[in-house]
Length: 434
View 1 (cartoon, rainbow, N blue to C red):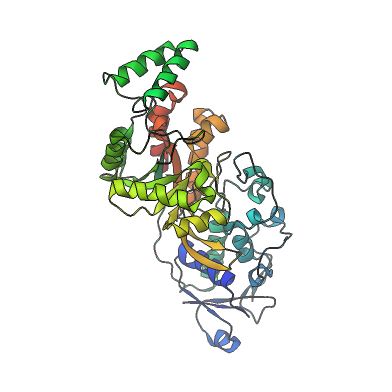
View 2 (cartoon, helix red, strand yellow):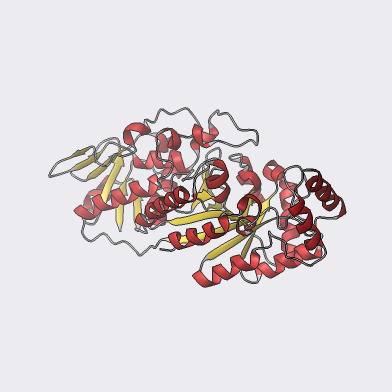
Protein backbone atom coordinates (compact mmCIF):
# COMPACT_ATOMS: atom_id res chain seq x y z
CA UNK A 1 0.00 0.00 0.00
CA UNK A 2 1.35 3.42 -1.02
CA UNK A 3 0.90 6.04 1.71
CA UNK A 4 0.65 9.71 0.77
CA UNK A 5 0.91 12.50 3.33
CA UNK A 6 -0.95 15.71 2.68
CA UNK A 7 -1.88 18.37 5.26
CA UNK A 8 -5.46 18.54 4.01
CA UNK A 9 -7.60 16.08 2.08
CA UNK A 10 -9.99 17.87 -0.29
CA UNK A 11 -12.44 16.53 -2.91
CA UNK A 12 -10.01 17.63 -5.63
CA UNK A 13 -7.11 15.76 -4.04
CA UNK A 14 -9.23 12.64 -3.57
CA UNK A 15 -10.37 12.83 -7.19
CA UNK A 16 -7.07 13.32 -8.99
CA UNK A 17 -5.07 10.94 -6.77
CA UNK A 18 -7.67 8.24 -7.40
CA UNK A 19 -7.52 8.84 -11.14
CA UNK A 20 -3.73 8.65 -11.30
CA UNK A 21 -3.08 5.80 -8.89
CA UNK A 22 -6.22 3.68 -9.29
CA UNK A 23 -7.42 4.24 -12.86
CA UNK A 24 -4.13 4.91 -14.63
CA UNK A 25 -1.63 2.87 -12.58
CA UNK A 26 -3.73 0.34 -10.64
CA UNK A 27 -1.65 1.08 -7.53
CA UNK A 28 -3.47 0.91 -4.19
CA UNK A 29 -2.87 4.01 -2.07
CA UNK A 30 -4.03 5.79 1.05
CA UNK A 31 -4.06 9.47 1.98
CA UNK A 32 -3.17 10.58 5.49
CA UNK A 33 -2.99 13.91 7.29
CA UNK A 34 -1.18 12.42 10.31
CA UNK A 35 2.56 13.04 10.29
CA UNK A 36 3.23 10.35 12.90
CA UNK A 37 1.50 7.68 10.80
CA UNK A 38 3.47 8.75 7.77
CA UNK A 39 6.83 8.66 9.56
CA UNK A 40 6.05 5.26 11.08
CA UNK A 41 5.10 3.74 7.73
CA UNK A 42 7.87 1.47 6.45
CA UNK A 43 6.40 0.83 2.99
CA UNK A 44 6.24 2.98 -0.15
CA UNK A 45 5.32 6.59 0.59
CA UNK A 46 5.72 10.19 -0.50
CA UNK A 47 4.54 13.58 0.70
CA UNK A 48 2.37 16.11 -1.10
CA UNK A 49 2.66 19.44 0.67
CA UNK A 50 4.45 22.79 0.76
CA UNK A 51 7.49 21.41 2.58
CA UNK A 52 9.32 18.12 2.68
CA UNK A 53 9.03 16.26 5.99
CA UNK A 54 12.27 14.32 5.79
CA UNK A 55 14.13 12.39 3.13
CA UNK A 56 11.05 10.99 1.41
CA UNK A 57 10.06 11.61 -2.19
CA UNK A 58 8.29 14.94 -2.08
CA UNK A 59 5.92 16.61 -4.53
CA UNK A 60 5.62 20.32 -3.83
CA UNK A 61 1.95 21.30 -3.97
CA UNK A 62 0.84 24.21 -6.13
CA UNK A 63 -2.29 25.09 -4.17
CA UNK A 64 -4.91 24.49 -6.86
CA UNK A 65 -6.18 21.32 -5.20
CA UNK A 66 -6.98 23.08 -1.93
CA UNK A 67 -8.89 25.91 -3.58
CA UNK A 68 -12.59 26.07 -4.39
CA UNK A 69 -14.39 27.50 -7.38
CA UNK A 70 -12.89 28.99 -10.53
CA UNK A 71 -10.23 31.64 -10.78
CA UNK A 72 -7.57 32.50 -13.33
CA UNK A 73 -4.42 30.47 -12.69
CA UNK A 74 -1.07 31.08 -14.33
CA UNK A 75 0.28 27.63 -15.17
CA UNK A 76 3.38 27.67 -17.37
CA UNK A 77 2.94 24.40 -19.27
CA UNK A 78 5.66 25.36 -21.74
CA UNK A 79 8.15 24.88 -18.89
CA UNK A 80 6.66 21.77 -17.33
CA UNK A 81 5.27 19.61 -20.12
CA UNK A 82 8.53 17.61 -20.41
CA UNK A 83 9.54 17.93 -16.75
CA UNK A 84 10.43 14.86 -14.75
CA UNK A 85 12.41 15.69 -11.58
CA UNK A 86 13.43 19.17 -10.49
CA UNK A 87 15.84 18.30 -7.68
CA UNK A 88 17.47 15.02 -6.69
CA UNK A 89 20.23 13.89 -4.33
CA UNK A 90 21.38 10.56 -2.93
CA UNK A 91 19.08 10.96 0.06
CA UNK A 92 15.96 12.63 -1.23
CA UNK A 93 13.98 13.66 -4.28
CA UNK A 94 11.94 16.85 -4.57
CA UNK A 95 9.55 17.36 -7.47
CA UNK A 96 8.74 21.05 -7.65
CA UNK A 97 6.39 20.43 -10.55
CA UNK A 98 2.93 19.60 -9.16
CA UNK A 99 1.74 16.90 -11.57
CA UNK A 100 -1.43 16.44 -9.53
CA UNK A 101 -2.59 20.06 -9.75
CA UNK A 102 -1.67 20.32 -13.43
CA UNK A 103 -3.42 16.99 -14.13
CA UNK A 104 -6.55 18.19 -12.34
CA UNK A 105 -6.52 21.39 -14.39
CA UNK A 106 -6.39 19.40 -17.62
CA UNK A 107 -8.78 16.55 -16.84
CA UNK A 108 -11.47 18.74 -15.22
CA UNK A 109 -11.48 20.95 -18.34
CA UNK A 110 -10.81 23.91 -16.04
CA UNK A 111 -10.04 26.14 -19.00
CA UNK A 112 -13.57 25.66 -20.35
CA UNK A 113 -14.99 27.26 -17.20
CA UNK A 114 -12.89 30.36 -17.87
CA UNK A 115 -13.95 33.03 -20.41
CA UNK A 116 -13.32 31.86 -23.97
CA UNK A 117 -14.60 32.34 -27.51
CA UNK A 118 -16.88 29.59 -28.80
CA UNK A 119 -17.27 28.63 -32.46
CA UNK A 120 -20.53 28.91 -34.43
CA UNK A 121 -21.76 25.66 -32.86
CA UNK A 122 -21.02 26.77 -29.31
CA UNK A 123 -17.92 24.59 -28.92
CA UNK A 124 -14.53 25.13 -27.31
CA UNK A 125 -11.99 24.91 -30.11
CA UNK A 126 -8.67 23.13 -29.97
CA UNK A 127 -6.51 26.16 -30.80
CA UNK A 128 -7.61 27.84 -27.56
CA UNK A 129 -6.44 24.95 -25.41
CA UNK A 130 -3.29 24.88 -23.35
CA UNK A 131 -2.49 21.48 -24.85
CA UNK A 132 -2.52 22.85 -28.41
CA UNK A 133 -0.68 26.06 -27.57
CA UNK A 134 2.08 24.15 -25.79
CA UNK A 135 2.34 21.32 -28.31
CA UNK A 136 1.17 18.30 -26.31
CA UNK A 137 -2.35 17.82 -27.68
CA UNK A 138 -1.38 14.50 -29.27
CA UNK A 139 0.12 13.13 -26.05
CA UNK A 140 -1.80 11.64 -23.08
CA UNK A 141 0.28 13.81 -20.78
CA UNK A 142 -1.46 12.90 -17.52
CA UNK A 143 -0.79 9.19 -18.10
CA UNK A 144 2.82 9.90 -19.06
CA UNK A 145 3.38 11.90 -15.86
CA UNK A 146 1.75 9.11 -13.85
CA UNK A 147 4.14 6.49 -15.22
CA UNK A 148 7.12 8.81 -14.68
CA UNK A 149 6.13 9.08 -11.02
CA UNK A 150 5.65 5.31 -10.83
CA UNK A 151 9.19 4.77 -12.18
CA UNK A 152 10.53 7.10 -9.50
CA UNK A 153 8.64 5.32 -6.73
CA UNK A 154 9.68 1.89 -8.01
CA UNK A 155 13.34 2.92 -7.91
CA UNK A 156 13.08 3.72 -4.22
CA UNK A 157 10.60 1.02 -3.23
CA UNK A 158 11.08 -2.29 -5.00
CA UNK A 159 8.04 -3.76 -3.23
CA UNK A 160 5.58 -1.37 -4.85
CA UNK A 161 3.06 -3.50 -6.71
CA UNK A 162 1.27 -2.67 -9.95
CA UNK A 163 -1.73 -4.72 -11.03
CA UNK A 164 -1.90 -5.65 -14.69
CA UNK A 165 -3.56 -3.06 -16.94
CA UNK A 166 -3.58 -3.49 -20.70
CA UNK A 167 -3.99 -1.35 -23.77
CA UNK A 168 -7.54 -1.35 -25.14
CA UNK A 169 -9.15 -0.20 -28.37
CA UNK A 170 -12.79 0.86 -28.80
CA UNK A 171 -14.31 1.55 -32.21
CA UNK A 172 -17.24 3.97 -32.15
CA UNK A 173 -19.49 4.46 -35.17
CA UNK A 174 -21.66 7.55 -35.59
CA UNK A 175 -24.98 6.93 -37.34
CA UNK A 176 -26.17 10.46 -38.03
CA UNK A 177 -27.18 9.52 -41.58
CA UNK A 178 -28.16 5.86 -41.76
CA UNK A 179 -29.00 5.99 -45.48
CA UNK A 180 -28.24 8.39 -48.28
CA UNK A 181 -31.34 7.52 -50.38
CA UNK A 182 -33.42 4.94 -48.55
CA UNK A 183 -36.38 5.78 -46.25
CA UNK A 184 -36.03 9.51 -46.75
CA UNK A 185 -39.75 10.10 -47.28
CA UNK A 186 -41.54 11.55 -50.30
CA UNK A 187 -40.60 15.20 -49.88
CA UNK A 188 -36.90 14.61 -49.17
CA UNK A 189 -36.63 12.00 -51.97
CA UNK A 190 -38.27 14.25 -54.58
CA UNK A 191 -36.14 17.17 -53.44
CA UNK A 192 -33.05 15.00 -53.78
CA UNK A 193 -34.02 13.91 -57.30
CA UNK A 194 -34.53 17.52 -58.37
CA UNK A 195 -31.28 18.73 -56.82
CA UNK A 196 -29.18 15.94 -58.34
CA UNK A 197 -30.80 16.39 -61.76
CA UNK A 198 -30.26 20.13 -62.01
CA UNK A 199 -26.71 19.91 -60.64
CA UNK A 200 -25.99 17.25 -63.29
CA UNK A 201 -25.29 14.51 -60.74
CA UNK A 202 -26.94 11.98 -63.02
CA UNK A 203 -25.28 8.96 -61.39
CA UNK A 204 -26.88 9.97 -58.10
CA UNK A 205 -30.25 10.21 -59.83
CA UNK A 206 -29.88 6.65 -61.12
CA UNK A 207 -28.56 5.32 -57.80
CA UNK A 208 -31.39 6.94 -55.86
CA UNK A 209 -33.94 5.49 -58.27
CA UNK A 210 -32.52 1.96 -57.99
CA UNK A 211 -32.33 2.10 -54.16
CA UNK A 212 -35.89 3.39 -53.77
CA UNK A 213 -37.17 0.63 -56.05
CA UNK A 214 -35.26 -1.94 -53.99
CA UNK A 215 -33.05 -2.93 -56.92
CA UNK A 216 -29.84 -1.75 -55.29
CA UNK A 217 -28.42 -1.49 -51.77
CA UNK A 218 -28.14 1.96 -50.22
CA UNK A 219 -24.45 3.04 -50.29
CA UNK A 220 -24.50 4.07 -46.61
CA UNK A 221 -25.80 0.67 -45.54
CA UNK A 222 -22.41 -0.58 -44.39
CA UNK A 223 -23.60 -1.99 -41.06
CA UNK A 224 -23.12 -5.62 -42.02
CA UNK A 225 -19.57 -4.86 -43.13
CA UNK A 226 -18.74 -3.10 -39.85
CA UNK A 227 -20.20 -5.91 -37.73
CA UNK A 228 -18.30 -8.49 -39.78
CA UNK A 229 -15.04 -6.64 -39.08
CA UNK A 230 -15.99 -6.38 -35.42
CA UNK A 231 -16.34 -10.15 -35.19
CA UNK A 232 -13.25 -10.91 -37.27
CA UNK A 233 -10.91 -8.69 -35.27
CA UNK A 234 -12.65 -9.04 -31.90
CA UNK A 235 -13.23 -5.29 -31.65
CA UNK A 236 -15.40 -3.62 -29.04
CA UNK A 237 -17.73 -1.51 -31.17
CA UNK A 238 -20.36 1.03 -30.15
CA UNK A 239 -22.95 2.41 -32.60
CA UNK A 240 -24.38 5.82 -31.75
CA UNK A 241 -27.78 6.36 -33.38
CA UNK A 242 -29.20 9.83 -33.96
CA UNK A 243 -32.92 9.64 -33.21
CA UNK A 244 -33.86 13.31 -32.91
CA UNK A 245 -36.35 15.16 -35.09
CA UNK A 246 -35.26 16.53 -38.47
CA UNK A 247 -33.52 19.94 -38.32
CA UNK A 248 -30.92 21.82 -40.34
CA UNK A 249 -28.27 19.94 -38.34
CA UNK A 250 -29.98 16.61 -37.64
CA UNK A 251 -31.06 14.85 -40.82
CA UNK A 252 -31.19 11.17 -40.04
CA UNK A 253 -34.10 8.86 -40.90
CA UNK A 254 -37.27 9.37 -38.88
CA UNK A 255 -37.39 7.15 -35.80
CA UNK A 256 -40.96 6.21 -36.74
CA UNK A 257 -39.89 4.35 -39.89
CA UNK A 258 -39.97 0.57 -39.50
CA UNK A 259 -36.84 -0.04 -41.57
CA UNK A 260 -34.84 2.27 -39.31
CA UNK A 261 -36.25 0.53 -36.22
CA UNK A 262 -35.27 -2.86 -37.66
CA UNK A 263 -31.77 -1.60 -38.39
CA UNK A 264 -31.35 -0.56 -34.75
CA UNK A 265 -32.84 -3.85 -33.50
CA UNK A 266 -30.48 -5.87 -35.69
CA UNK A 267 -27.47 -3.82 -34.60
CA UNK A 268 -28.14 -4.22 -30.88
CA UNK A 269 -28.07 -8.01 -31.36
CA UNK A 270 -24.37 -7.86 -32.28
CA UNK A 271 -22.98 -4.62 -30.85
CA UNK A 272 -23.30 -2.05 -28.12
CA UNK A 273 -25.66 0.83 -28.89
CA UNK A 274 -25.74 4.37 -27.56
CA UNK A 275 -27.59 7.57 -28.35
CA UNK A 276 -26.32 10.32 -30.58
CA UNK A 277 -27.89 13.25 -28.73
CA UNK A 278 -29.28 15.74 -31.25
CA UNK A 279 -27.82 19.16 -31.98
CA UNK A 280 -30.23 21.13 -29.81
CA UNK A 281 -30.24 18.69 -26.88
CA UNK A 282 -27.03 20.21 -25.55
CA UNK A 283 -29.03 22.38 -23.14
CA UNK A 284 -32.48 20.74 -23.30
CA UNK A 285 -33.03 17.92 -20.83
CA UNK A 286 -36.58 17.15 -21.98
CA UNK A 287 -35.43 16.71 -25.57
CA UNK A 288 -32.63 14.36 -24.56
CA UNK A 289 -34.87 12.28 -22.31
CA UNK A 290 -37.39 11.82 -25.12
CA UNK A 291 -34.74 10.73 -27.62
CA UNK A 292 -33.25 8.33 -25.07
CA UNK A 293 -36.69 6.86 -24.32
CA UNK A 294 -37.44 6.42 -28.04
CA UNK A 295 -34.21 4.47 -28.51
CA UNK A 296 -34.85 2.37 -25.40
CA UNK A 297 -38.31 1.45 -26.67
CA UNK A 298 -36.75 0.08 -29.86
CA UNK A 299 -33.81 -1.75 -28.28
CA UNK A 300 -35.63 -2.92 -25.13
CA UNK A 301 -32.45 -2.05 -23.23
CA UNK A 302 -31.41 0.71 -20.86
CA UNK A 303 -29.36 3.22 -22.88
CA UNK A 304 -26.43 4.48 -20.80
CA UNK A 305 -23.95 5.57 -23.51
CA UNK A 306 -24.11 8.86 -25.42
CA UNK A 307 -22.29 11.18 -27.76
CA UNK A 308 -23.35 14.73 -28.59
CA UNK A 309 -24.02 15.44 -32.27
CA UNK A 310 -21.44 17.91 -33.58
CA UNK A 311 -19.69 17.26 -30.24
CA UNK A 312 -21.70 20.11 -28.76
CA UNK A 313 -20.82 20.13 -25.06
CA UNK A 314 -21.18 23.05 -22.69
CA UNK A 315 -19.34 22.29 -19.46
CA UNK A 316 -20.77 21.65 -16.94
CA UNK A 317 -24.40 22.12 -18.12
CA UNK A 318 -24.48 19.40 -20.80
CA UNK A 319 -22.94 16.80 -18.52
CA UNK A 320 -25.47 17.61 -15.80
CA UNK A 321 -28.27 17.01 -18.30
CA UNK A 322 -26.76 13.66 -19.28
CA UNK A 323 -26.52 12.60 -15.65
CA UNK A 324 -30.10 13.67 -14.97
CA UNK A 325 -31.21 11.62 -18.00
CA UNK A 326 -29.62 8.43 -16.73
CA UNK A 327 -26.54 8.48 -18.99
CA UNK A 328 -23.49 7.03 -17.25
CA UNK A 329 -20.97 7.00 -20.14
CA UNK A 330 -20.24 9.83 -22.57
CA UNK A 331 -18.00 9.66 -25.64
CA UNK A 332 -17.97 13.35 -26.67
CA UNK A 333 -14.62 14.33 -25.18
CA UNK A 334 -12.58 15.32 -28.21
CA UNK A 335 -12.22 17.96 -30.91
CA UNK A 336 -13.84 18.02 -34.34
CA UNK A 337 -11.08 20.27 -35.70
CA UNK A 338 -8.04 18.35 -34.47
CA UNK A 339 -6.79 14.99 -33.26
CA UNK A 340 -5.35 14.18 -29.87
CA UNK A 341 -6.45 14.15 -26.24
CA UNK A 342 -8.72 17.00 -25.24
CA UNK A 343 -8.46 16.15 -21.53
CA UNK A 344 -4.79 15.06 -21.86
CA UNK A 345 -5.54 11.50 -20.77
CA UNK A 346 -6.27 8.24 -22.58
CA UNK A 347 -7.80 6.65 -19.50
CA UNK A 348 -11.59 6.88 -19.00
CA UNK A 349 -12.38 9.18 -16.09
CA UNK A 350 -15.32 10.48 -14.10
CA UNK A 351 -16.45 14.05 -14.70
CA UNK A 352 -15.62 16.39 -11.82
CA UNK A 353 -18.10 19.25 -11.44
CA UNK A 354 -15.98 22.18 -10.28
CA UNK A 355 -18.99 24.36 -9.46
CA UNK A 356 -20.23 21.79 -6.96
CA UNK A 357 -16.77 20.40 -6.10
CA UNK A 358 -17.52 16.71 -6.39
CA UNK A 359 -16.95 13.72 -8.65
CA UNK A 360 -20.07 12.80 -10.61
CA UNK A 361 -21.28 9.40 -11.78
CA UNK A 362 -20.67 10.26 -15.46
CA UNK A 363 -17.73 8.36 -16.93
CA UNK A 364 -15.98 10.11 -19.81
CA UNK A 365 -14.35 8.08 -22.60
CA UNK A 366 -12.08 10.51 -24.52
CA UNK A 367 -11.53 9.78 -28.20
CA UNK A 368 -8.27 10.47 -30.02
CA UNK A 369 -9.23 10.89 -33.68
CA UNK A 370 -12.20 10.98 -36.05
CA UNK A 371 -12.42 10.09 -39.74
CA UNK A 372 -13.87 13.39 -40.93
CA UNK A 373 -11.31 15.40 -38.96
CA UNK A 374 -8.39 13.51 -40.49
CA UNK A 375 -9.59 13.68 -44.08
CA UNK A 376 -11.94 16.66 -44.40
CA UNK A 377 -10.76 18.90 -41.58
CA UNK A 378 -6.99 18.50 -41.50
CA UNK A 379 -6.87 17.32 -45.13
CA UNK A 380 -4.24 14.69 -44.46
CA UNK A 381 -3.22 12.27 -47.15
CA UNK A 382 -4.03 8.64 -46.39
CA UNK A 383 -0.39 7.93 -45.53
CA UNK A 384 -0.10 10.94 -43.22
CA UNK A 385 -3.36 10.07 -41.49
CA UNK A 386 -2.30 6.47 -40.91
CA UNK A 387 1.12 7.60 -39.66
CA UNK A 388 -0.60 9.94 -37.19
CA UNK A 389 -2.84 7.12 -35.98
CA UNK A 390 0.15 4.83 -35.52
CA UNK A 391 1.96 7.47 -33.47
CA UNK A 392 -1.08 8.00 -31.25
CA UNK A 393 -1.56 4.25 -30.82
CA UNK A 394 2.06 3.92 -29.71
CA UNK A 395 1.59 6.73 -27.19
CA UNK A 396 -1.48 5.03 -25.75
CA UNK A 397 0.17 1.60 -25.65
CA UNK A 398 3.13 2.94 -23.67
CA UNK A 399 0.80 3.88 -20.82
CA UNK A 400 -1.61 0.93 -21.21
CA UNK A 401 -4.44 3.31 -22.02
CA UNK A 402 -7.68 3.12 -23.98
CA UNK A 403 -7.70 4.27 -27.60
CA UNK A 404 -11.09 5.37 -28.93
CA UNK A 405 -11.73 6.22 -32.59
CA UNK A 406 -14.73 7.84 -34.31
CA UNK A 407 -15.94 6.71 -37.72
CA UNK A 408 -19.21 7.03 -39.62
CA UNK A 409 -21.14 4.36 -41.49
CA UNK A 410 -20.80 6.38 -44.69
CA UNK A 411 -17.00 6.20 -44.37
CA UNK A 412 -17.15 2.63 -45.66
CA UNK A 413 -19.61 3.40 -48.46
CA UNK A 414 -16.97 3.62 -51.16
CA UNK A 415 -18.99 6.36 -52.88
CA UNK A 416 -19.06 10.12 -53.19
CA UNK A 417 -16.15 11.86 -51.39
CA UNK A 418 -15.67 8.79 -49.15
CA UNK A 419 -14.45 6.63 -52.01
CA UNK A 420 -10.87 6.19 -50.77
CA UNK A 421 -11.85 5.62 -47.13
CA UNK A 422 -13.24 2.13 -47.65
CA UNK A 423 -9.75 0.63 -47.46
CA UNK A 424 -8.59 3.30 -45.00
CA UNK A 425 -10.79 1.85 -42.25
CA UNK A 426 -9.31 -1.62 -42.74
CA UNK A 427 -5.76 -0.25 -42.60
CA UNK A 428 -6.60 1.75 -39.51
CA UNK A 429 -7.90 -1.38 -37.74
CA UNK A 430 -4.66 -3.23 -38.46
CA UNK A 431 -2.66 -0.39 -36.92
CA UNK A 432 -4.70 0.02 -33.74
CA UNK A 433 -4.86 -3.74 -33.16
CA UNK A 434 -1.09 -4.28 -33.44
